[in-house]
Image 1 (tube, rainbow, N blue to C red):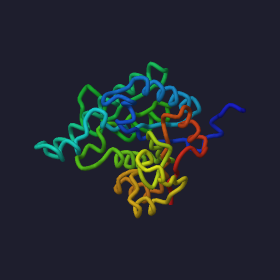
Image 2 (image 1 turned 90 degrees about the horizontal axis):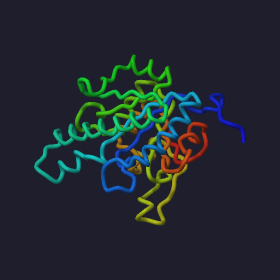
Image 3 (image 1 turned 90 degrees about the vertical axis):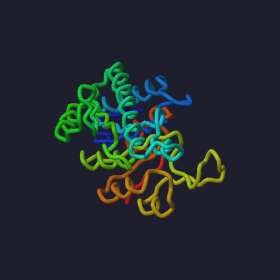
Amino acid sequence: MSTPSSQNLKYKRVVLKLSGEALKGSQPYGIDLNVVESLARQIRKVVQLGVQLALVVGGGNIFRGINVADASSLDRVTGDYMGMLATVINGLALQNVLEHNGVEARVQAALEMGKLVEPFVLRKTQKYLEAKNVVIFVAGTGNPYFSTDTAAALRASEIEADIIFKATKVDGVYSDDPKKNKDAEFYSQLTYEEVLRKRLKVMDATAVSLCMDNAIPIMVFNMGVENNIEKAILGHSVGTLIRG
């Protein structure tokens, strides 16, 4: 089998959306460094192929504002800002592990963070990507009531990404939760309209609509399978492809 090269790449500029839950592994909360190390190794491979890669990371492994606000006296806006801060913790962890694996990484926040991380500035982002630095976007869109899925769709639109990879713990998109319903149907391909009409739990409607408006496809796959990111970059079928 021949070694993949930049000429084999189907996608050259990619936004990889990582949920906070994906980073906790089998732990009840927090960051499983074994998961992050495995992810860093996969990312190193695709960066070496010449892929320009940006990450959007959630914070649900540390704090989910919407869940807490629904069940307590904490208001939604405060909860969402707390969730944004959780994404910064995850972003710093990812940056550190990536750099230990020989991958240059930059963390950019949608909120001013002083000396902690730099603010998102599109021109800087473009330069980092062209220099093969992985850019890690944190703090969502910087606004409450918007998910990190929407942040991924927004950043992908701004940097003119070829595709959004949504890394999950399942093989792709199903008609129902496959862990609870053994008869759930797996979809290898879907249109944006089908996702919205069937109310499939892929991304929230705002994120899907933004991808549809800007013709950005979405690939949903299991990041726990070794080399799935590389396979997806090369155009192999590893999950569910959503497009127009």
